Image 1 (cartoon, rainbow, N blue to C red):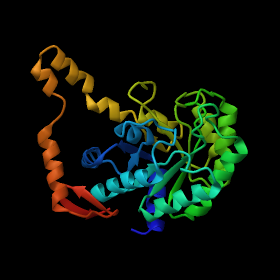
Image 2: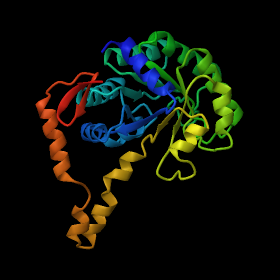
Image 3: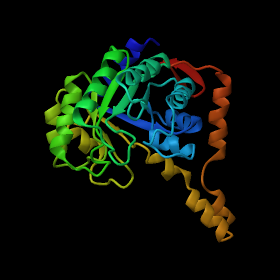
Image 4: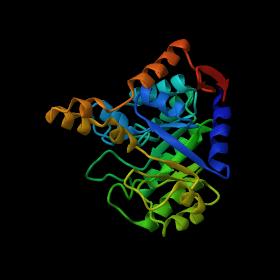
Length: 291
């Protein structure tokens, strides 16, 4: 599917009345299971992907090439629109950011997130002008072929400055970012302020199993257009602690009761029937359907 078509499709999902719930996968099987559950789009998580490799997120320990292959796998397996969580754009220069966006388009991704982090623990958030210039470079490279999410990690990096967060997101919107995102900002009192400041651009929110103050319906009422779980689904579904405790207590039932292996086998069997999947086709009961 051409980049412009993917762009229009993912943009439409963001802007419809019900908004969009994006599932976050971390490997091929999780992508298949989320597609099988009926999600309409799949996201990568730089944190979850780094963890699968035994690396830290946000420290430039994962390369652009590795993440592109990771995201391309999800698209090939599921045929769903893929949104890549591509940290700071994988590079120090504006040209590096543009090259990352161009590579994501070539890889068939429908969306890409670029954040204002630096990879430097002593100065984790880039200066305002630097962050805005990098976002402009990403948008210019995208050319409406891929949805660009402009993200500030102020709150994740211990900088709960709402005014600066809105200033950054507004600037990202002004240079052309399609969606705006400030992870960990789930405060019902401030969300309407953020949504109003950025209208009519869609606002995305990441939640985790620990967030129980708002339902998706409640977030929609506040004007949020995209909801995802970021990396939270990855550790919550592994059940490693449960399995380990079962082995320690010599309880084989508890140790083994961590997943449905029959369902896993069924999903993998479907993939064998379709050696090469392209974005625009979808896993649905073994049949390939137009997306």
